Structure formats: C-alpha cells, structure tokens
Image 1 (cartoon, rainbow, N blue to C red):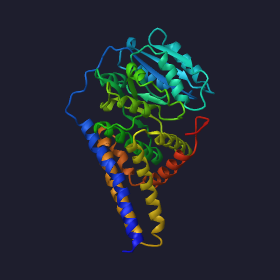
Image 2: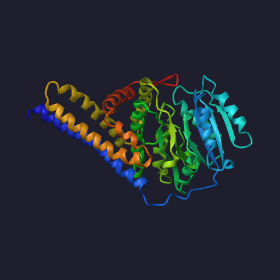
Image 3: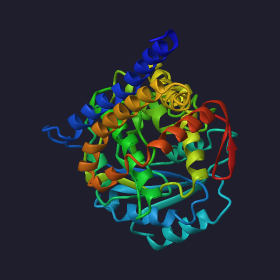
Image 4: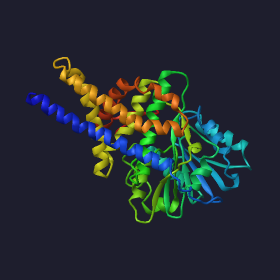
Length: 385
C-alpha cells in the first residue's frame, strides 16, 4: 500500500471511531436511563408551575399548543401559562387573547409583548421577559408550534428532586405516510436519543427547548440567559450546561415515554436546512472542548464519506474504505435508534434508515459548514450565528 492510501486509511479509521464511539456510548446511556429499575423521583405534586412560551408568527399553531397544555392532568389551579409575543407580524397575539378569554376563570393565561427585541438572541430575550413575570418556582418551557401530552406537565414535575435544577424531556417529530416526514422523524429520534443517552451516562450535552423545566433558584443562580444575548440560538443547551456545572444543582432527564412533546418537521428542504443551520450555529459556542470536538469530528467524518466517494473513481480502494465506514456508521446508529424506537413505539421508522443515508451525509456537511461560518433565516429574520 502506497503512502497516500495508508494515510487516508488511518485518518478514516480515526474519524470513524470519533463518530461511532459517541453513538455506542449514548446508546448504552439511553438503555441505562429508560431500562433503569430505579423508581421515578417523587417530585412535588402541588408546586405552582409557570409554563412560558415565546411565540413568533405562530397564529396557525399556538391554539393547538395552548389547548394541549390546558388538557393536562396537572391541577389547573397549580399552573399558569405565559405567552410572550416575539415581535410577530401575524395574528398570534389575537389568537392567544381569544383563547385566554375562553378559559377565563379556569386557567390563568397571560400574554405579553417582548419589549425592544435585540438584534440577536430574540427568543432568549422573550423567554427572559416571560420568566421575570412568572409566578411559579418551577418553570416549564415549550415551543409555540408544539403540542404536549396530557401527562407532560405532571411527569416533568415528578422528575424533580430537591437538588434538581433542570429537567429535560423527550421531543419527537409528527409524521404522516410520506417518506419525507418519516425520514425526518427517524433522524430527529436519533438526535433525541443521543441527548437522552448523554444524560443516562451522567454527561449531558444536549436538550431541547421544546421540553425543558427548571427551578427559578437555579435559573437565577447561573444568571439566566445573561451573557448569551449575542447568540441567536442555544437558549436550551447553554442554560442546561450552566446549571449542570454548578455545585448546588443536578440536571435530570424525564424518563416517562408518555411525557413526549410532539412538533411538526420542516415541510420543505429549505426549511430543514435553515433549521439545522440555526442549530449548528450554537455549537461553536460550547464551552467544553469535548462538545466542540464531537461536532467537528462528526462533520469531518461526513466530509470524509463524500471525499471517498469521489476519490473512488480514481482508486477503487477508497470505495472499500467508504463501504466499511458507512457500514459501521449504520450499525452504530442502529444501536441508538433501536432502543429509542422501542421505547417510544416508533419501530416502523427503522425501515427508512438505509434510505436516509445519502441525504443525511449531505445535509450534515452543508448545514454544519453553513451554520458555523454563515448566517441563517428564522421566521422572517435574517440572523448571524
């Protein structure tokens, strides 16, 4: 074997280990989390809770979101809903006020307008504004385009121990009969399982703002979103990392499958790429080197797959290396996807695993590079990372 193929082979081996290793590690963590024989924490059952939602241009989604929260099995006298309008240009506020009027006297629903939105970090500013006006000692956050399960609130609350500062919950994409929505639901299930697995291993790295709860004391102790205003994304993960680093608080994951929060996948390729660019933009700001290294390692692994496919036309050895990398990639991903599909009753999605492989590689490389080095558009706003 000549020098160049040898170097390529060794490099690809290192990149494969860097990609496959964390997936297997997270898969083990996921099983620890959801197959644990430990009892669920007996959290507070009569704690007053504030559900805070930042909404921008969600007139078509916000009513369904509010309706799902109001159907909660948590006593209505022990929670309130606070909506902060994030400079919407549609009828979001009108829809919320009409809905609040229907539940007047039953559930407290308040709507505010976020004052003077900053140039970046608008969602953080809106959430911070709502949190400042909330009455609850425990705050639950979800997104305006989500619908929560009936047990979401009670399950999230029951996951708090006395020293728990933050609880993250499972989120999944809705899907229909189309291959597009099912492929996205499968891919997103993997991302959710990866995050849950990191909690199971005691090294939480990610969570979703669509299902997150925290104590006001923990939020205030770490300064809330202060110092993160310049970031246009990452309100969920950055806050979780801050609380996890404190000596006084622990972070936990809600391991009740029925507490899942559902949201719609992007309806178009452009919408998907913009969403993933926004998600990727926060990774460069991770404070721990291992998180940044994981992102870079995954991006290089996917880039190597594309490079090997091209190089194989000149030397078939590279196609052999490529086939091995893809095989190991799929095996490691299934180690994570299968237990998640079983826990959340989504085994029918696994048949799309092989179909999404080419798309997965291409979009990760494009969205990763675009998110790290460029801006993106979100709900009519052009933002920078």
